[in-house]
Image (cartoon, rainbow, N blue to C red; front, top):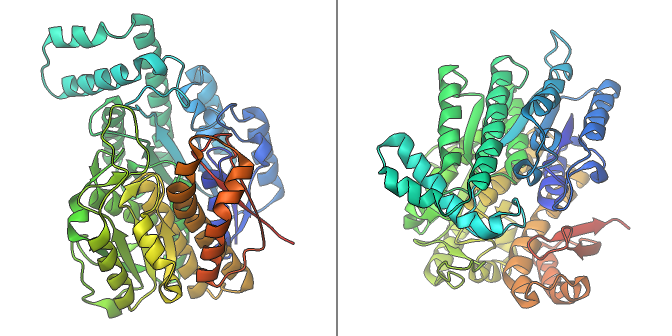
Length: 503
């Protein structure tokens, strides 16, 4: 089976990791040259990228195209917030999808992601327009007020006071950009109704529970419901993990066509973690979990609140969610509480116990912290090769949605390889690389090495500090990763790349 993958940009989590997940299922992946993709500093080469896609589709037969639409529409996820191109030009790029499948043909399927433009509650303009460094939090507050105004009356004087804090030309520019992207997203939903797209995830990146982004999502999903597309279009907080989820969704479609369902049960550690507010998402951890498993096509047998194993003989996967009653954060943002130290001793013991008792393969979603794994848990787990060997999926990075989506996708891919007799030396190696990468990035780097770097993106210091952790991971997994290279692909300490160099 063969898939064409068009990532959101050139980051490891969006360009490299989805291919690794698909490879662990025994799926051949074709992706564009990395040089065509967008980065933090430049947009994708859109015309060249679309040309490459068209030529590749003409010369190959694919079962599915899995695409982050932001790449061909705006040049990438980051540039979707900066791109000045008019709606007409973007709509023309979108129309190229209609040529990807011949009339009357059912292949390739087209599974796509589009994003609702985020609104960050900070003054960091690294991934935004320049004016965010001065007016970011003011725009966030103004956006929330506009959302409230759409639901109920708000004193005009209050609105005036919020708008006086932001120059008119900046407000106009921001609303113009948002409206253009929203118009394009409406057109994308129309493509599902027109059967150009077979599956769509509308991702909401870094969101609170109020704002113009939340309002746009509501309107888009109203359109989806009115068109009776609820089984084809999903929307929830997330972004960087969505292509993984689309891969899992497509794999589950293949299994269902064979009469096979993947059934799973969730166990929260502690139980209160289900109702814990999820940072950067505007909802609870249980709500994020529910939306992610639905999008991935997994059938869950419990209500996301039980911590037991009743009916274990009827399930294929045990999903262990390691959390807390308050989610920590390995990143300290100006003006916000310091949540870098959360006491997780009790839930670590409970999580280890849940893994010990599990009678099925396990997916471990570590959401005790945002922006990295729980060091207490992983340092316990790394001493237990017997428990590591039970894992068919693990993640503990960025947001709850990022973690859950990527961990679930790993598990689905692993089971797919087993159930379809695709498991072999190559798929085993691909799976081991997935697990090694997540442990290396989410634990070794994000929670142990990154705090020591103090924002200094020194490759030499990175390699020196992370080496002993990588050795521990390999020993625990009983996996020899071969030659490894670590780097900062975006020349900053936020994201790491672990590159496996075959001898």
